[in-house]
Amino acid sequence: MDKDRVIIFDTTLRDAEQTPGASLTVPDKLEIARQLARLKVDVIEAGFPISSNEDFEAVHRIGQEVEGPVICGLARVVLKDIDRVGEALEGADSPRIHTFVGTSDIHLAGQLRKGKSEVLEMAVAAVKHARSYCDDVEFSPMDATRTDPDYLREVVQATIEAGATTINIPDTVGYAVPEQFGELIRQLLAKVPNMSDAVLSVHCHDDLGMAVSNTLVAVKAGARQVECTLNALGERAGNAALEEVVMSLATRSDYFGLHCGVVSKEIIASSRLVSRLMGIGVPPNKAIVGANAFAHSSGIHQDGVLKERNTFEIMSPRDVGLEDTSIILTARSGRHALRHRLEELGYRLSQEELDKAYERFLTVADKKKEVFDEDLMAIIGDEISNVPEKFQLEYLHTVSGTGTVPTATVRIRIDGGDCVQESARGDGPVDATYAAISQATGVVAKVDEYVIKAITGGSQAMGEVTLRVVEGDLKITGRGASTDIIEASGKAFVDALNRLEVRRGRQVQQAQAV
Image (tube, rainbow, N blue to C red):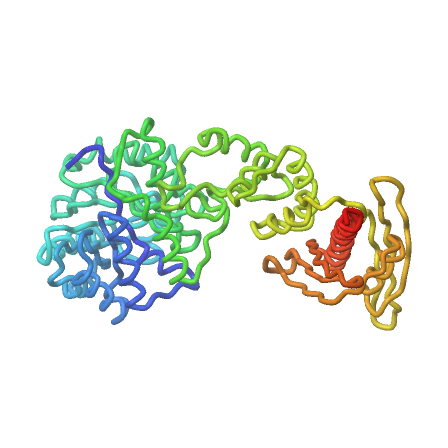
């Protein structure tokens, strides 16, 4: 065995299924197991066959149908449990039986109500019985981190002598701290005479938020198998997250000097599959697989990542199966990020146009958590125009409601000079707005068509208004966009009036030419 290789033992189908609210059918388990095989974990703990007929079937079918990883079933140090695992794994290419018993004084007295010597005999007998089914047997002294160290070493030595090929040290209740856990692993390697005859494994829970830290300290101390789950799911606060352990070993290979066989580009696909089938969402701030793990919204961070990725990213998103870094446009984003995204959308803006678009972008971003591509396209269509702005909407205020006569007050800047303010009533806030704009500009044009649509989803969506105005034989289209649909309507009307002024000017020029 490569002494620098870490075996990845995935217990998503066993321990993670014990997550409150999680439930997997046999087809669900098979689908996840096939994905774990694509991920190339070394061992899949497929279930606890004695617990139910469905778990038995899942372990059996995974053992028959999934190729590549070792397929493992869990059993207490009870002979009928081990028989059930043996039956479930019959015919599997690479079977493993994993048996366990509590060894801490708390478990001996509080749960098992047996003495140390009796529990030791049970552990040895269970390992020997498991070896009658397969050569690959794992033993776990449950609650090892609260077990008397001398007794723990005695149990480990005896079970290796009985035939255990892997010894797993569980921090069952997440009690250990890294320095203490690392020392425990070092002492086992140094003081158990036959420890070199088995692989030393760890299984850490996250009750104090240290599962991954304890796991990594353990491999640094000499453990060569880690038991983990996707998305850190599991009993209570969960287990060490597979994705965090794997990417820590890869990203900090300079420190650990270790490697594993996991295909990291399958991590995102695996995480999303487990999340979907278990019905448990991944927190956005979850390391490696959370929606924000490779997303940047701070202007400083966006500028740095766009110039040189490693300024604010220590991993490439492609390494875990994502297409690219996500630049999230928010009120904290800078001009560099906005220009970058606009160029990706096909817009090449001058500095003056960018400054104008950025000011509008900030106005929209202050009203929304995130500005989407559709919002940007509406902003560009709304703000970056070759149409001269004779009229600019500077201010708009409307009042409407049940039993209230709708009124609107607008302030229009004309030819970049003085502003004209007018108020008007109407059949609704939009009609009142158009009446007030007509009074302020002195242009009377009839709205012939009016279409409103949401550009993006949700209550904070940008709305886009497209309308057509008619004056004599001229028909002009105007557009406006805003998170405030009344404002979008006003901007669309002013846009149409500006276009109308351009068309009028062309008609005059043509008449003079004749």
